[in-house]
Length: 104
Image 1 (cartoon, rainbow, N blue to C red):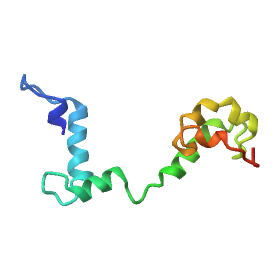
Image 2: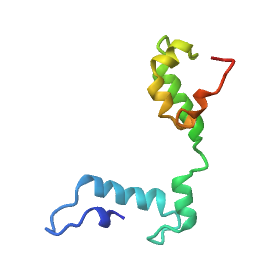
Image 3: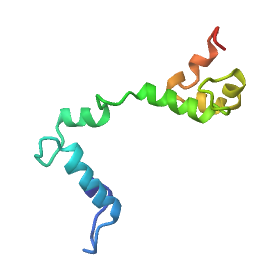
């Protein structure tokens, strides 16, 4: 896909980001080394089995909002960072915040 985003018409050296993308493709995305990505390789790239998106997002929200770094969020910490929670997949883009929660 780098050719879709960069056409080296002048014949000069490729930018660093193109070189990096080619390396990423050959080292991590093209698992069977056939020069193209099949359905399973795309699935592995988009939804890697060894990465928990929900856990990563939850950790990100706590890290960014936990002002006193006690690994617990107070109501004030959440309200002070409401925009981060409203824009998060972890809260279903804010929809889950409109429901009654005992913990809040």
